Image 1: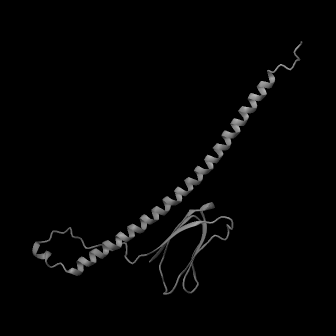
Image 2 (image 1 turned 90 degrees about the vertical axis):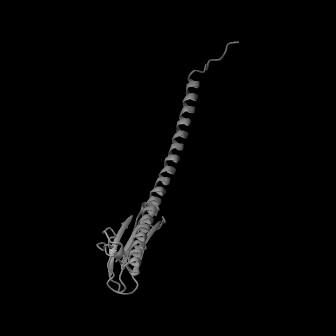
Image 3 (image 1 turned 135 degrees about the vertical axis):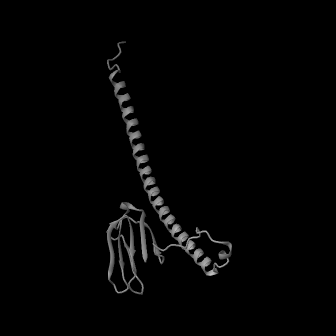
Length: 173
């Protein structure tokens, strides 16, 4: 089983086109202008699968894309043999080294899966952080423009009021 996880982290619009083709050229997945996606594909044939991220619809802006391929060989229903059973000390000696190695390998596989999910969450956090930083820059810019306009209006009002109260009659000598 092959999983493809994709996330547009930064760039205008936060969207890209995505296609996945089999080694024979059969289109397996096609998405247009998506910001994120998770796809599960059963590899049916041996060979190189073609993965394409396309930003040609947006020639002005560039995008930063995080993607990850997860090759999953474990079935979700697969259970590790439980150690919770009550076992006599003599029977503990019958545990084979292969069983221990199998348990360790299963734990390693599940830890790798956890690492992959944490990596995906880091990518989501990076995208959200970039979005918030962009929003902060826009808010700061427009706040500065508003303050400048307010100060300009205040200066103009003071000058206008001074003109109203100036005496324009000539002083007699």
